[in-house]
Structures are given as structure tokens and as C-alpha cells.
Length: 191
Image 1 (cartoon, rainbow, N blue to C red):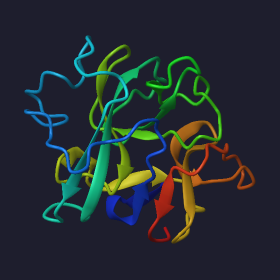
Image 2 (spheres, rainbow, N blue to C red; image 1 turned 180 degrees about the horizontal axis):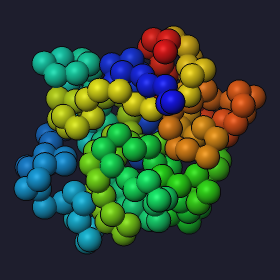
Image 3 (cartoon, rainbow, N blue to C red; image 1 turned 120 degrees about the horizontal axis):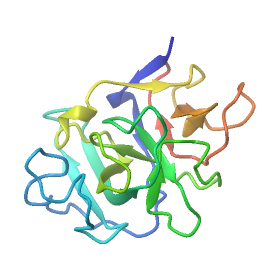
């Protein structure tokens, strides 16, 4: 049975290249709303790798800043990418093309990790959460528990590769199968 950690109990460290405008306005129709014209689309609407940083006022989810990044999905594994799925770069030649399949992931100690905001298909472009507190205020589908390795402790660094599953886990390779992916964030509570 999988262990879980609540969205308010960890944050992501943005290790992706480039910077996000401080307290940016959100795209006109949000990041992953049903009516938006730029998330889960077959054509690139924003430049790959562009980031937006927004402030969560605590009215829904944790209070603090969150960063979103625009990425393209490469080839996902059989579980399919959905809201709360962790993704990592698929290719050394294009860091902004991602997969949730560790067998295709670029295993470098980069900490390049992002979280899908919704279901998204192979070859589609869309927004992903890549830094700061969980942006529940902007994407309600990110609320709740995330699958994780049972070795997470309060204050401990986290990665997103554990065994053969892309999920939260301890940031080392000595805990029974974790593959070091660099520090992707920190746990605020033990599980």
C-alpha cells in the first residue's frame, strides 16, 4: 500500500532554468481550467520553459508563493499523467519535454521535477507546478495527498524518483530503491 503526504506538508524547489516574474498575473483563463486555450493543447501556445510565479493567500491550501512552468509531454508510462503526477525531463537535448516514466527519464542529479495539474496526453503542452507551496488556490485538483516513499522525515530533502515509480521519496540511493534525482524540495512534516 502506498504512503501519502498532504499537499501542505511539502514544497518544491524550482531547479528549472530561467526565472519567473515576481507575483505575475495568471494567464487569462487560469492554468488548467476546462475552458483554457493553452493547457493540454496539441500546439505550443507559450514558449517552452516560461514560468509564472503567483501568491497563494491561504484561502485554499498553504500560504506562500508557487511557480508554474510550461512544458511538453513526451512519452508517458502506462499509468498516464494525471493531476498530482510527478514528471522529470525525458531528453538531454530538450529539458522542457517531460515524462512520468522513470525508464525514459533523464537521470541527472538536477532536481528537475514538476507536477501535472491535470490529465495531459503525449505530445501535448501545458502548465506544471515546479516550485514553492502547492498552488491549491489556483488548481483545486492539486489538493489532498500525494504518493510518497515511507522514508520522508520533517525537514528532509525530497526527490521524485523512487524505485520504478515517479513519486516523492528520500533524496538518496540507499533507501531500498530510490534513484538520486537531486533535491526537488523539502518535507515540512514526517509521514
